[in-house]
Image 1: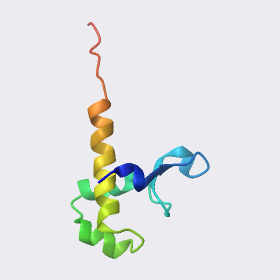
Image 2: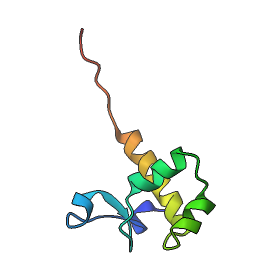
Image 3: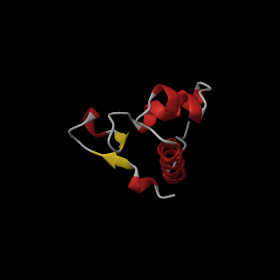
Length: 76
């Protein structure tokens, strides 16, 4: 799956945070729910505008952003 089909960045909504297309739900919010132990089915039950592919797109987006992240240790 290609997350770009489901995740958008719109500076006019939530200050440009990545969102699930067609909603005002941020990727951050969905990933936080998963981190708190919510299952994808529970998320979809509580947010019926989302489908399984939306939840997976949020994870794929987060994964890609983390792969691109670079950490540079500071000299102490």
